[in-house]
Image 1 (tube, rainbow, N blue to C red):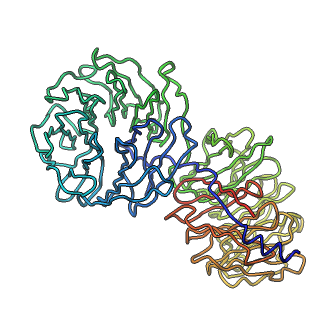
Image 2: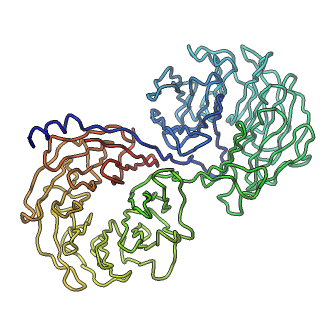
Image 3: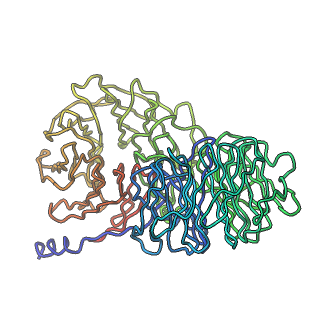
Length: 618
């Protein structure tokens, strides 16, 4: 019966995506960031790396990620019909893809010019697309969405075009804004140059028509916003008279009723303007740090969004301008490591990114934040949670930190232990013991203090795990072996080596301590039986590239591995053929971390800066 059950189990093994905790937008100082609105009002769009992120505006914890671009994506915009999204990348490729299906089928792909695409605008009938940016031979193009054939020429600028807008009512016209300090007004279709607007004195970052097409606004690095007549292009007013903001303005967005304008500026404020009265209705002070500069904004239904240089997305509150209703946080850079912990019956995911930022997520709701205070200054390489509710993290800033996950704040002093050389991996044991492997060193800590160091162990240590019983430490080496140490007082003594056959990248004990599993650079996953003197139990094959992370399920029967082949496998210790292959968990990005929330929920992280949860069934 057992055999029969086993063969059934491999047939029944399945998985599904449970949730995506999306990355933040990728932003850079002094560069406007376009947030794409949804004509149906449900979602908003932005980009990070090669990904386009679609987020639910009412509940940003609900997200979807499009990852089909081969190059970094700069901008994405919904068609007014709501059925398609056009996204443009740094190579000048524009992809038009379906929004109604989970697969996001590609409809068309074009290359209007060679160079970075900075903005995209659709005509109101969803039939024409204008694309602008930093082309080598031209700065813009306007064409039919289904054939790519040109419907005019975007001319009149001598430098890169930053922004484009198409009027939503007849007679149609198109406006562009450029680094040459001008806007150009084009009539059509076919669109052709009509005249130049020379009101700005510096780069023009953004141009947008009001929803009814009666007016358009331009915003620039000179801190000015000009309002023009949509039909004639005549200047109506300059918001705030002399200056609208004390810094460059990166974005503007109209209210749905055409009467107000939201502006986002490098002076660390966003403002709502009454356009007719030419007055500020509300000023939102976003903070005093350089990271509080505002680079993008969106007004959609009742939501006012503003994007900070930190990558945070702020939901502005008209009634309380100094405190946003909510701030969407997360990672904007790749995530090298992840761990989980249960606290008061709730599960939390802790993820760290290569800039040293650590984020904690409520696994159920997606609510998240970072710790208070100053933390790691460089990539966090590994994290674990010890028995006294401390997050133990090691980083390329040559420190090991102990952070209380109940208080959620960084402290200096004894909570930071300085290493002699860079640490790579950390493992926690019982009784306050922590083992850290560094370059050419193995360091034993007890109660946040160094108690012993093995200098030059005779091999390069890469990964470490402590047996749940607490008496053995396994260190995986670049020499293709696992070195076993036992605790002798406050020191470690090598007692045995096991042959793996290739450089060990990660290793983990099952929670009951029965098995040790390793993964290596030769794509092999090996299991050893602890009680049998660490004899090889089985080898597991399937990965096409280096395997980099491994984690055991709480059921002690299954374990997961992730690799550079973008694959995750879930293996069964008692039957190497019973496995789940999870291709494209983070499409086009290799998997950097795997960990289990419970027997049926796997968490994966990757260089796409997203955290994903998967439901697993056996």
